[in-house]
Length: 196
Image (cartoon, rainbow, N blue to C red; front, side, top):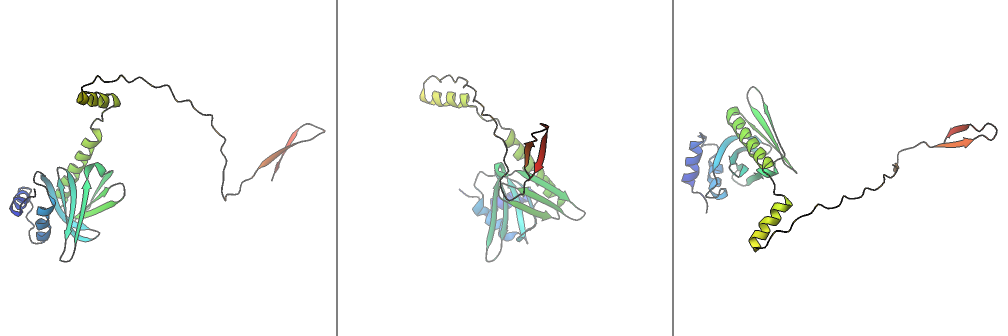
């Protein structure tokens, strides 16, 4: 189930977004992108590598929407995919760099306050996802056994893995190396070193 255009415009006006002339195609496109229970939290307009666009944060993801007459560019970034968020503010505008595993999204806007609020929300969502406790193996076994109505098996610690001795380092490749050989003089018994 998707949102209607009236619901999208009502939520955007609640967020203080009144730039209807420049972003009318992007607002129309939101009704096809957002699900019915998805909540918009922050929105800002600005520039990215492809031109003028809208950057929208919801409770689930971050969306960059650029709708022109002949094409649509849509970036859907989930919060758990974001590895780093950098924010840089200058006198007239501000830029945010959102880094994921395989790409960097650069977005610049003149509305610094709105962009900073969006960055703050994204950072909070990323930190919440990073700090959520992962289930241990024992907890997973207990949940699985309760679903099957069987007692959970007791997990015993395993024996330590034996360590292997370190092998000497050998440099391979096109780098020139110098090797030293030891020759012992027969008369004195003192070793001399020769470089080859």
